[in-house]
Amino acid sequence: MNSLIKKAIFRFYREIGTRDLVFFFKKKLARKSLLKKTLDGPLRELAENGAINYKGIIDKDILDRWISEYGLDVSNITPSEGNLAIPFFNEDVLSILTDSKFAVLLDNYFINMYRCHPVLQCIPNLVITYPNIVHENFDSKTNNFPANWHTDYVSEFTVHLPLISINSSNTHTMYAKNTHTSLLGPPRNEQAIRNIFRSFGEKTDALMLDVDGWHQGRLEGSSPRIMVQFKYTMGNDLLLHPTEGLSDKALSQIKRTKENLSNYCVIKQRLKENYLFAKNMSTLNPKFSIIKDNCKNYDEYI
Image 1 (cartoon, one colour):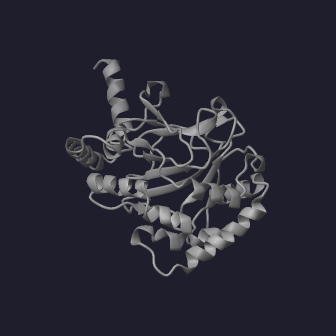
Image 2 (tube, rainbow, N blue to C red):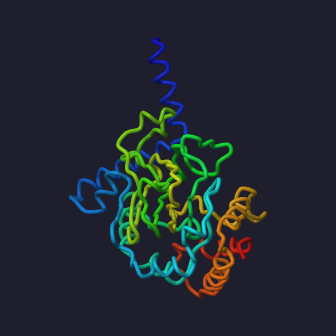
Image 3 (cartoon, rainbow, N blue to C red):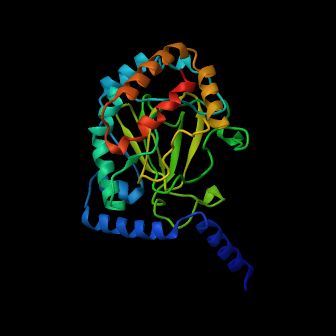
């Protein structure tokens, strides 16, 4: 057999080895059906590409209040070797989760693609990315950024709400369009990846990514990326608080967050308030049941 053919077959089997073929065949068929009956609009764009910037749908006053209350000023943030993150759940967040245009769009997408509602995978997080390296120097063994091309849990879907303009001067997510139903994982040669969606956006936008598709964090350090992040799945792979406690990796991120936010004392007070709000809620939509479990995550922060 020709050596080039052997290499092509080997690459094919290596890359499908990381994908659930039955799941992705079903997803391809669901996408085809959805595109056939949806002529235009954000649902079609999302189904077609796997990613969308849903523009101007979040109340700017809410975002400005968060920036003020948490002291999210660039002067308070130090560049670091990995993402900074804190649990982020309050009355405003709950309102956005239950009554926003992106929540409606996401619900429609999941119902059409998977015949179920999206389930929150973990408590929402405020994520700050301000790398102390350039992308070309990234080393996955020593740097704590998701900067290699990869996919996430099966059916995982991520929504980013920018609290600052995200453009070419910030770290941003690069997404290979139309790979969210691919039977293959991302190739080792990233130069072969084309048709890229760059997750640029402004305050009030919602960046929505079906992360069954290939994506990477593109590290840019001119200014930080500050965003609220929501993660969903069909209900699989919920990120429950570990019975043995948080992992060393998670504890390292918490330590890094405390050390690289000069106003952490202000943030800590907000976290105490948020913890009480989450803990004392009497009722919660089953789609958000992970919130009660993840209340335990606050212990290491406050």
